[in-house]
Length: 157
Image 1 (cartoon, rainbow, N blue to C red):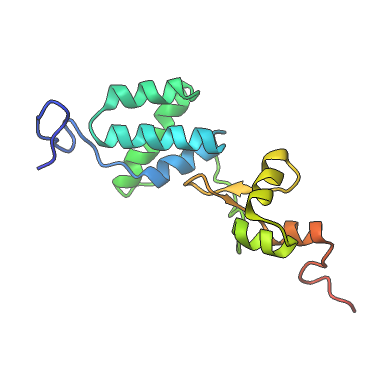
Image 2 (cartoon, rainbow, N blue to C red):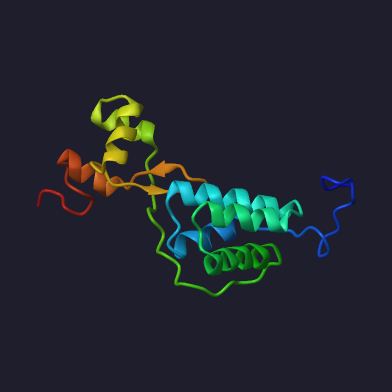
């Protein structure tokens, strides 16, 4: 049996709850907290809540720059996701990319090191989106546009 820091057993619904971290992170992104830093804070806070550290989870979220109302929406989405319910909230963003490129793939396309692609992304020179886990991904059509390649459907007629 899992126990908390004081040795007490964690009982679902009493002092520990199942939390769907991915659902909570999706709500965080829809609520304007999609940056890698905010996603990391939300993930950490959701995991603390799942361990039975409700107060610590809320303090972590607030200290990490997430406002109280948004934290409660994020937590509600995580709890609802674990219960198999749909959570209402801001409209979901469309799928960011049907075929996302990894940083290594972008680096190979440009003939540069992966670290260079990361620097370009941080400098805003190449558009990217982040996964719920906070990793960068790139849209193929945007990378190909930067390379000057025609996008699919723009063939030579």
